[in-house]
Image 1 (cartoon, rainbow, N blue to C red):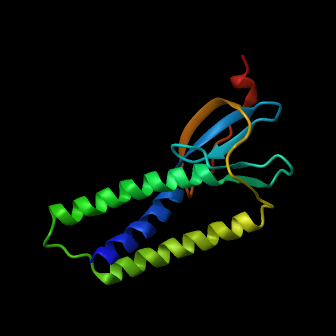
Image 2: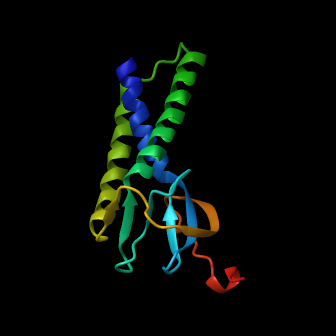
Length: 150
């Protein structure tokens, strides 16, 4: 049962982490305005070298993943404690794993075609101009720059 809970938690974490996230509209120091994604720390953003590139920050991603994993594990354990008579069927775990893998494969295809840059952490400062939340199926809104100018 413990192995199944960990498997379910890993799959739900990957689904939840990419399905609901926060976007950050920022102005990096000595750079153009860019969009970044991730909660509570932005771990993915638009790249500087081409218009369609992405950049990833490994430590920020690991911190976000650990937070999401802890939250989802706590929710799954709370569910199994509050409803001990309800056993999570293996079919449910398999279905969640399939959904998770489909999502990860789709995101991997997008990332692999974007000429990504992978860094340990973000090595520049920025000024956050606006933030918001976005679902996977929504387009991230890009605020107009003239509205945000002082």
